[in-house]
Length: 416
Image 1 (tube, one colour):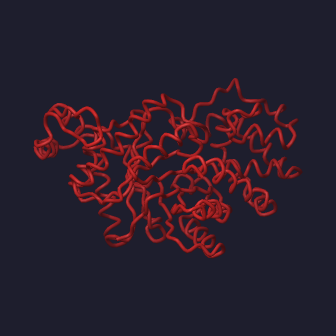
Image 2 (image 1 turned 45 degrees about the horizontal axis):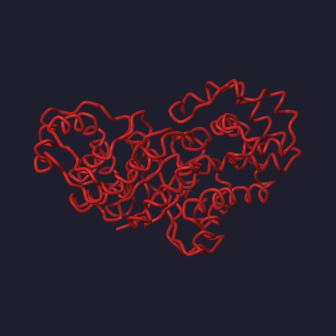
Image 3 (image 1 turned 180 degrees about the vertical axis):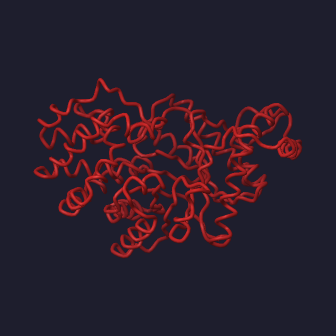
Protein backbone atom coordinates (compact mmCIF):
# COMPACT_ATOMS: atom_id res chain seq x y z
CA UNK A 1 0.00 0.00 0.00
CA UNK A 2 1.18 3.50 -0.86
CA UNK A 3 2.18 5.48 2.23
CA UNK A 4 2.63 9.20 2.51
CA UNK A 5 5.40 9.29 5.11
CA UNK A 6 5.60 11.24 8.35
CA UNK A 7 6.14 14.75 7.02
CA UNK A 8 4.77 15.91 3.69
CA UNK A 9 4.60 19.32 2.14
CA UNK A 10 2.06 20.33 -0.51
CA UNK A 11 3.41 22.76 -3.06
CA UNK A 12 0.99 24.44 -5.42
CA UNK A 13 2.17 25.99 -8.64
CA UNK A 14 -0.42 27.88 -10.64
CA UNK A 15 1.61 28.11 -13.87
CA UNK A 16 3.80 24.98 -13.58
CA UNK A 17 7.14 26.80 -13.93
CA UNK A 18 8.57 26.57 -10.39
CA UNK A 19 8.69 22.82 -9.71
CA UNK A 20 12.49 22.69 -9.57
CA UNK A 21 12.75 25.68 -7.24
CA UNK A 22 10.13 24.15 -4.93
CA UNK A 23 11.91 20.80 -4.88
CA UNK A 24 15.29 22.47 -4.25
CA UNK A 25 13.89 24.00 -1.05
CA UNK A 26 12.59 20.65 0.18
CA UNK A 27 15.81 18.84 -0.69
CA UNK A 28 17.74 21.48 1.23
CA UNK A 29 15.63 20.69 4.32
CA UNK A 30 16.12 16.97 3.75
CA UNK A 31 19.91 17.44 3.57
CA UNK A 32 19.58 18.81 7.11
CA UNK A 33 18.38 15.37 8.20
CA UNK A 34 14.64 15.46 7.60
CA UNK A 35 12.51 13.44 5.25
CA UNK A 36 9.80 15.71 3.92
CA UNK A 37 7.84 14.27 1.02
CA UNK A 38 6.96 16.71 -1.78
CA UNK A 39 3.36 16.70 -2.99
CA UNK A 40 2.49 18.84 -5.99
CA UNK A 41 -1.14 19.90 -5.71
CA UNK A 42 -3.57 21.76 -7.95
CA UNK A 43 -7.33 22.06 -7.72
CA UNK A 44 -9.92 21.84 -10.43
CA UNK A 45 -10.73 25.54 -9.93
CA UNK A 46 -7.08 26.48 -10.56
CA UNK A 47 -6.94 24.32 -13.70
CA UNK A 48 -10.05 26.10 -15.02
CA UNK A 49 -8.64 29.56 -14.26
CA UNK A 50 -5.26 29.01 -15.87
CA UNK A 51 -6.50 26.67 -18.60
CA UNK A 52 -4.20 23.82 -17.59
CA UNK A 53 -4.73 20.07 -17.27
CA UNK A 54 -3.93 17.63 -14.43
CA UNK A 55 -1.29 16.02 -16.68
CA UNK A 56 0.67 19.32 -16.58
CA UNK A 57 1.21 18.85 -12.83
CA UNK A 58 2.45 15.29 -13.28
CA UNK A 59 4.81 16.43 -16.04
CA UNK A 60 6.17 19.28 -13.90
CA UNK A 61 6.73 16.99 -10.89
CA UNK A 62 8.43 14.26 -12.94
CA UNK A 63 10.68 16.77 -14.71
CA UNK A 64 11.75 18.47 -11.46
CA UNK A 65 12.53 15.10 -9.84
CA UNK A 66 14.59 14.02 -12.84
CA UNK A 67 16.43 17.33 -13.23
CA UNK A 68 17.48 17.43 -9.56
CA UNK A 69 18.12 13.70 -9.29
CA UNK A 70 15.74 13.48 -6.34
CA UNK A 71 15.59 9.91 -5.06
CA UNK A 72 12.75 9.99 -2.53
CA UNK A 73 9.02 9.42 -2.88
CA UNK A 74 6.80 12.21 -4.23
CA UNK A 75 3.13 12.59 -5.11
CA UNK A 76 0.75 14.50 -7.36
CA UNK A 77 -2.40 15.60 -5.55
CA UNK A 78 -5.80 16.08 -7.18
CA UNK A 79 -6.68 18.85 -4.76
CA UNK A 80 -10.24 19.50 -3.57
CA UNK A 81 -11.94 17.10 -5.95
CA UNK A 82 -15.46 15.67 -5.77
CA UNK A 83 -17.39 13.11 -7.80
CA UNK A 84 -18.17 15.65 -10.51
CA UNK A 85 -14.57 16.82 -11.00
CA UNK A 86 -12.40 13.78 -10.26
CA UNK A 87 -12.32 12.00 -13.65
CA UNK A 88 -9.57 14.03 -15.44
CA UNK A 89 -7.24 13.53 -12.44
CA UNK A 90 -7.48 9.75 -12.19
CA UNK A 91 -4.75 8.77 -14.60
CA UNK A 92 -2.03 11.20 -13.51
CA UNK A 93 -2.61 11.65 -9.75
CA UNK A 94 -1.67 9.35 -6.91
CA UNK A 95 -2.97 11.51 -4.05
CA UNK A 96 -6.61 12.60 -3.87
CA UNK A 97 -8.03 15.27 -1.58
CA UNK A 98 -11.70 14.35 -1.25
CA UNK A 99 -13.44 17.63 -0.54
CA UNK A 100 -16.72 16.88 1.20
CA UNK A 101 -17.27 20.27 2.88
CA UNK A 102 -20.34 20.96 0.70
CA UNK A 103 -22.07 17.89 2.20
CA UNK A 104 -21.70 18.92 5.84
CA UNK A 105 -25.20 19.31 7.28
CA UNK A 106 -26.91 17.56 4.35
CA UNK A 107 -29.68 15.18 5.36
CA UNK A 108 -29.09 11.48 5.96
CA UNK A 109 -31.67 8.70 6.23
CA UNK A 110 -33.17 8.18 9.70
CA UNK A 111 -32.12 4.53 9.77
CA UNK A 112 -28.51 5.42 8.88
CA UNK A 113 -28.39 7.90 11.75
CA UNK A 114 -29.88 5.32 14.11
CA UNK A 115 -27.42 2.65 12.96
CA UNK A 116 -24.49 5.02 13.56
CA UNK A 117 -25.69 5.96 17.05
CA UNK A 118 -26.20 2.28 17.93
CA UNK A 119 -22.66 1.50 16.80
CA UNK A 120 -21.36 4.12 19.25
CA UNK A 121 -23.12 2.84 22.39
CA UNK A 122 -19.89 1.69 24.01
CA UNK A 123 -18.62 5.31 23.93
CA UNK A 124 -21.60 6.84 25.78
CA UNK A 125 -20.83 8.56 29.08
CA UNK A 126 -17.27 9.61 29.86
CA UNK A 127 -14.78 8.68 27.18
CA UNK A 128 -11.12 8.81 28.19
CA UNK A 129 -8.76 9.67 25.35
CA UNK A 130 -5.12 9.19 26.46
CA UNK A 131 -3.41 12.56 26.83
CA UNK A 132 -6.59 14.66 27.02
CA UNK A 133 -6.97 15.83 30.61
CA UNK A 134 -10.76 15.89 30.83
CA UNK A 135 -12.83 12.92 29.66
CA UNK A 136 -15.08 13.59 26.64
CA UNK A 137 -18.76 13.69 27.60
CA UNK A 138 -20.57 11.57 25.01
CA UNK A 139 -24.37 11.76 25.04
CA UNK A 140 -26.94 10.34 22.67
CA UNK A 141 -27.90 13.90 21.73
CA UNK A 142 -24.27 14.74 20.84
CA UNK A 143 -23.99 11.64 18.64
CA UNK A 144 -27.25 12.56 16.92
CA UNK A 145 -25.99 16.09 16.24
CA UNK A 146 -22.67 14.77 14.87
CA UNK A 147 -24.49 12.24 12.67
CA UNK A 148 -26.85 14.90 11.31
CA UNK A 149 -23.93 17.13 10.56
CA UNK A 150 -21.32 14.74 9.14
CA UNK A 151 -22.83 11.43 8.05
CA UNK A 152 -23.69 12.68 4.54
CA UNK A 153 -20.20 14.17 4.13
CA UNK A 154 -18.48 10.91 5.09
CA UNK A 155 -20.86 9.01 2.81
CA UNK A 156 -19.72 11.28 -0.02
CA UNK A 157 -16.08 10.56 0.84
CA UNK A 158 -16.81 6.86 0.69
CA UNK A 159 -18.45 7.20 -2.76
CA UNK A 160 -15.48 9.11 -4.19
CA UNK A 161 -13.09 6.61 -2.60
CA UNK A 162 -15.05 3.66 -4.07
CA UNK A 163 -14.83 5.26 -7.52
CA UNK A 164 -11.06 5.75 -7.18
CA UNK A 165 -10.53 2.23 -5.86
CA UNK A 166 -12.36 0.89 -8.93
CA UNK A 167 -10.38 3.10 -11.34
CA UNK A 168 -6.90 2.90 -9.79
CA UNK A 169 -6.93 -0.23 -7.64
CA UNK A 170 -6.76 -0.44 -3.88
CA UNK A 171 -3.56 0.82 -2.27
CA UNK A 172 -2.40 2.71 -5.38
CA UNK A 173 -3.14 6.21 -4.09
CA UNK A 174 -3.16 8.34 -0.95
CA UNK A 175 -6.54 9.41 0.44
CA UNK A 176 -7.01 12.75 2.16
CA UNK A 177 -10.40 13.93 3.41
CA UNK A 178 -10.93 17.67 3.54
CA UNK A 179 -13.60 19.59 5.46
CA UNK A 180 -11.75 22.86 5.86
CA UNK A 181 -13.54 25.25 3.50
CA UNK A 182 -16.47 25.92 5.83
CA UNK A 183 -17.29 28.58 8.40
CA UNK A 184 -17.60 26.46 11.56
CA UNK A 185 -14.59 24.57 12.91
CA UNK A 186 -14.88 20.88 13.75
CA UNK A 187 -14.20 20.13 17.40
CA UNK A 188 -11.88 17.28 18.46
CA UNK A 189 -14.88 15.20 19.59
CA UNK A 190 -16.51 15.70 16.18
CA UNK A 191 -13.22 14.71 14.54
CA UNK A 192 -13.23 11.48 16.55
CA UNK A 193 -16.64 10.41 15.27
CA UNK A 194 -15.95 11.63 11.72
CA UNK A 195 -13.00 9.22 11.76
CA UNK A 196 -15.25 6.44 13.04
CA UNK A 197 -17.68 7.11 10.16
CA UNK A 198 -14.83 6.95 7.64
CA UNK A 199 -13.53 3.72 9.18
CA UNK A 200 -17.04 2.21 9.17
CA UNK A 201 -17.34 3.06 5.48
CA UNK A 202 -13.96 1.54 4.64
CA UNK A 203 -12.16 4.76 3.70
CA UNK A 204 -8.44 4.28 4.56
CA UNK A 205 -7.82 7.96 5.18
CA UNK A 206 -4.12 8.84 5.60
CA UNK A 207 -4.57 12.54 6.19
CA UNK A 208 -7.51 14.64 7.32
CA UNK A 209 -7.92 18.40 6.90
CA UNK A 210 -10.35 19.83 9.44
CA UNK A 211 -11.39 23.44 9.78
CA UNK A 212 -9.60 24.84 12.80
CA UNK A 213 -10.65 27.79 14.92
CA UNK A 214 -9.43 31.15 13.59
CA UNK A 215 -8.94 32.56 10.12
CA UNK A 216 -6.69 30.75 7.64
CA UNK A 217 -6.65 33.49 5.05
CA UNK A 218 -4.76 33.00 1.81
CA UNK A 219 -1.12 34.02 1.89
CA UNK A 220 -1.14 35.86 5.22
CA UNK A 221 -0.58 34.90 8.85
CA UNK A 222 -3.07 33.09 11.07
CA UNK A 223 -5.66 35.33 12.72
CA UNK A 224 -7.09 33.97 15.95
CA UNK A 225 -6.48 32.91 19.53
CA UNK A 226 -3.14 31.06 19.58
CA UNK A 227 -3.86 29.31 22.89
CA UNK A 228 -7.18 28.03 21.59
CA UNK A 229 -5.51 26.81 18.39
CA UNK A 230 -2.80 25.03 20.40
CA UNK A 231 -5.38 23.25 22.58
CA UNK A 232 -7.45 22.20 19.56
CA UNK A 233 -4.45 21.05 17.50
CA UNK A 234 -3.07 18.99 20.40
CA UNK A 235 -6.45 17.37 21.09
CA UNK A 236 -6.87 16.59 17.37
CA UNK A 237 -3.47 14.85 17.38
CA UNK A 238 -4.49 12.79 20.43
CA UNK A 239 -7.92 11.97 19.01
CA UNK A 240 -6.32 10.76 15.76
CA UNK A 241 -3.95 8.53 17.74
CA UNK A 242 -6.91 7.07 19.64
CA UNK A 243 -8.99 6.65 16.44
CA UNK A 244 -6.20 4.77 14.65
CA UNK A 245 -6.03 2.20 17.44
CA UNK A 246 -9.76 2.07 18.15
CA UNK A 247 -11.16 2.00 14.61
CA UNK A 248 -8.33 0.32 12.71
CA UNK A 249 -7.47 3.29 10.51
CA UNK A 250 -4.05 3.50 8.77
CA UNK A 251 -1.35 4.02 11.40
CA UNK A 252 0.21 6.84 9.39
CA UNK A 253 -3.01 8.93 9.58
CA UNK A 254 -2.07 12.54 10.33
CA UNK A 255 -3.41 16.07 10.33
CA UNK A 256 -3.36 18.18 7.20
CA UNK A 257 -3.30 21.97 7.46
CA UNK A 258 -4.81 23.61 4.40
CA UNK A 259 -4.02 27.23 3.49
CA UNK A 260 -1.05 26.42 5.67
CA UNK A 261 1.32 28.71 3.82
CA UNK A 262 2.42 31.80 5.70
CA UNK A 263 0.76 30.84 9.01
CA UNK A 264 3.99 31.76 10.74
CA UNK A 265 2.57 32.33 14.23
CA UNK A 266 1.22 28.77 14.50
CA UNK A 267 4.31 26.99 13.11
CA UNK A 268 6.13 26.87 16.48
CA UNK A 269 2.93 25.55 18.12
CA UNK A 270 2.49 22.77 15.57
CA UNK A 271 6.21 21.93 15.68
CA UNK A 272 6.14 21.59 19.46
CA UNK A 273 3.05 19.33 19.47
CA UNK A 274 4.10 16.99 16.66
CA UNK A 275 7.52 16.63 18.32
CA UNK A 276 5.97 16.01 21.73
CA UNK A 277 3.90 13.08 20.41
CA UNK A 278 6.23 12.06 17.57
CA UNK A 279 3.49 12.61 14.96
CA UNK A 280 3.47 13.59 11.32
CA UNK A 281 2.02 16.59 9.49
CA UNK A 282 0.90 17.49 5.98
CA UNK A 283 1.03 21.18 5.15
CA UNK A 284 -0.48 22.71 2.02
CA UNK A 285 1.04 25.90 0.67
CA UNK A 286 -0.85 26.61 -2.51
CA UNK A 287 -0.65 30.18 -3.77
CA UNK A 288 2.48 31.36 -2.03
CA UNK A 289 4.61 30.33 -5.04
CA UNK A 290 2.54 32.46 -7.43
CA UNK A 291 3.10 35.47 -5.13
CA UNK A 292 6.85 34.85 -5.32
CA UNK A 293 6.60 34.91 -9.12
CA UNK A 294 5.09 38.40 -8.97
CA UNK A 295 7.75 39.45 -6.43
CA UNK A 296 10.47 38.07 -8.72
CA UNK A 297 9.07 39.96 -11.71
CA UNK A 298 8.97 43.18 -9.69
CA UNK A 299 12.59 42.71 -8.55
CA UNK A 300 13.66 42.03 -12.15
CA UNK A 301 12.46 45.52 -13.07
CA UNK A 302 11.80 46.71 -16.64
CA UNK A 303 9.10 44.61 -18.35
CA UNK A 304 8.88 42.39 -15.23
CA UNK A 305 7.92 45.30 -12.98
CA UNK A 306 5.56 46.63 -15.67
CA UNK A 307 3.76 43.27 -15.74
CA UNK A 308 3.52 43.14 -11.92
CA UNK A 309 1.96 46.62 -11.89
CA UNK A 310 -0.40 45.65 -14.71
CA UNK A 311 -1.60 42.62 -12.68
CA UNK A 312 -2.32 44.86 -9.70
CA UNK A 313 -4.14 47.49 -11.76
CA UNK A 314 -6.41 44.89 -13.30
CA UNK A 315 -7.02 43.15 -9.96
CA UNK A 316 -7.84 46.46 -8.31
CA UNK A 317 -10.55 47.11 -10.89
CA UNK A 318 -11.92 43.54 -10.67
CA UNK A 319 -11.66 43.09 -6.91
CA UNK A 320 -15.20 41.84 -6.31
CA UNK A 321 -15.12 39.30 -9.13
CA UNK A 322 -11.71 37.91 -8.12
CA UNK A 323 -12.49 37.77 -4.40
CA UNK A 324 -15.93 36.13 -4.66
CA UNK A 325 -14.74 32.49 -4.98
CA UNK A 326 -12.39 33.01 -2.01
CA UNK A 327 -14.78 34.83 0.32
CA UNK A 328 -14.22 32.33 3.17
CA UNK A 329 -10.44 32.64 3.08
CA UNK A 330 -9.61 36.31 2.55
CA UNK A 331 -10.18 39.55 4.47
CA UNK A 332 -9.31 42.62 2.45
CA UNK A 333 -9.92 46.15 3.69
CA UNK A 334 -10.42 48.09 0.42
CA UNK A 335 -9.54 51.37 2.18
CA UNK A 336 -6.06 50.02 2.83
CA UNK A 337 -5.35 49.12 -0.78
CA UNK A 338 -2.99 51.58 -2.51
CA UNK A 339 -4.40 53.29 -5.60
CA UNK A 340 -3.30 52.16 -9.04
CA UNK A 341 -1.59 55.54 -9.60
CA UNK A 342 0.36 55.16 -6.39
CA UNK A 343 1.51 51.63 -7.26
CA UNK A 344 2.50 52.75 -10.75
CA UNK A 345 4.95 55.20 -9.18
CA UNK A 346 6.67 52.51 -7.05
CA UNK A 347 10.22 51.27 -7.49
CA UNK A 348 10.84 47.55 -7.88
CA UNK A 349 12.00 47.33 -4.24
CA UNK A 350 8.90 49.11 -2.93
CA UNK A 351 6.57 46.79 -4.88
CA UNK A 352 8.42 43.65 -3.72
CA UNK A 353 8.55 44.78 -0.08
CA UNK A 354 4.83 45.59 -0.02
CA UNK A 355 4.01 42.12 -1.35
CA UNK A 356 6.64 39.94 0.36
CA UNK A 357 5.45 38.32 3.58
CA UNK A 358 7.76 39.81 6.18
CA UNK A 359 5.16 40.90 8.75
CA UNK A 360 7.24 43.52 10.58
CA UNK A 361 8.56 45.18 7.41
CA UNK A 362 7.32 48.79 7.25
CA UNK A 363 6.21 48.39 3.60
CA UNK A 364 4.35 45.07 4.01
CA UNK A 365 0.62 45.31 3.25
CA UNK A 366 -1.51 42.18 3.86
CA UNK A 367 -4.44 43.68 1.91
CA UNK A 368 -2.26 44.21 -1.16
CA UNK A 369 -0.87 40.68 -0.75
CA UNK A 370 -4.28 39.03 -0.52
CA UNK A 371 -5.58 40.85 -3.56
CA UNK A 372 -2.57 39.75 -5.65
CA UNK A 373 -3.08 36.24 -4.25
CA UNK A 374 -6.51 35.92 -5.87
CA UNK A 375 -5.37 37.69 -9.06
CA UNK A 376 -3.64 34.74 -10.73
CA UNK A 377 -6.63 34.67 -13.10
CA UNK A 378 -5.41 38.03 -14.46
CA UNK A 379 -1.95 36.60 -15.17
CA UNK A 380 -3.57 33.58 -16.82
CA UNK A 381 -5.50 35.89 -19.16
CA UNK A 382 -2.20 37.55 -20.13
CA UNK A 383 -1.20 34.20 -21.63
CA UNK A 384 2.29 34.02 -23.10
CA UNK A 385 2.96 37.64 -22.15
CA UNK A 386 3.09 36.37 -18.56
CA UNK A 387 4.65 32.94 -19.07
CA UNK A 388 7.38 34.32 -21.36
CA UNK A 389 8.43 36.60 -18.50
CA UNK A 390 8.57 33.60 -16.15
CA UNK A 391 11.06 32.03 -18.56
CA UNK A 392 13.01 35.25 -19.08
CA UNK A 393 13.46 35.86 -15.35
CA UNK A 394 13.48 32.20 -14.27
CA UNK A 395 16.64 32.56 -12.14
CA UNK A 396 15.45 35.55 -10.12
CA UNK A 397 11.98 34.06 -9.62
CA UNK A 398 13.35 30.61 -8.80
CA UNK A 399 15.54 31.98 -6.03
CA UNK A 400 12.53 33.88 -4.59
CA UNK A 401 10.45 30.70 -4.61
CA UNK A 402 13.19 28.62 -3.00
CA UNK A 403 13.96 31.21 -0.34
CA UNK A 404 10.27 31.59 0.53
CA UNK A 405 9.65 27.87 1.02
CA UNK A 406 12.93 27.12 2.79
CA UNK A 407 13.62 30.24 4.88
CA UNK A 408 10.11 31.39 5.71
CA UNK A 409 8.31 28.04 5.89
CA UNK A 410 10.48 24.95 6.42
CA UNK A 411 12.97 26.59 8.78
CA UNK A 412 10.20 27.83 11.04
CA UNK A 413 8.19 24.61 10.94
CA UNK A 414 11.05 22.20 11.53
CA UNK A 415 13.39 24.37 13.61
CA UNK A 416 16.14 24.17 10.99
